[in-house]
Image (cartoon, rainbow, N blue to C red; front, side, top):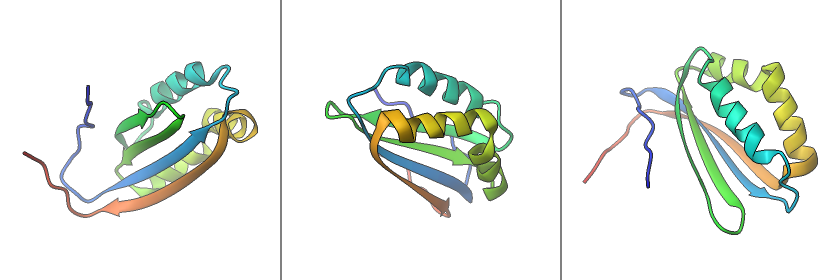
Length: 108
């Protein structure tokens, strides 16, 4: 089942988080749920889309109104704890990309 984020007309920003989960996932699901709940309270948050395959490779894209909103999310104290735990426990590797969305197309 797909769940598309409710996006405004561009421009807006996308933070793309690609990750490979490690075998140690204790506490991960609870933290992921808390981070979604926290992000939803942040000024400038629009929505997110997320998927993870059976090998543990996942992509989460969160959408934001501005770069300042992204910076506030990145430096949020609770999010900083999750980032630290992710680096120490939950991810073998990750990549974060930030992009400005200038156009979007829908289908079919």
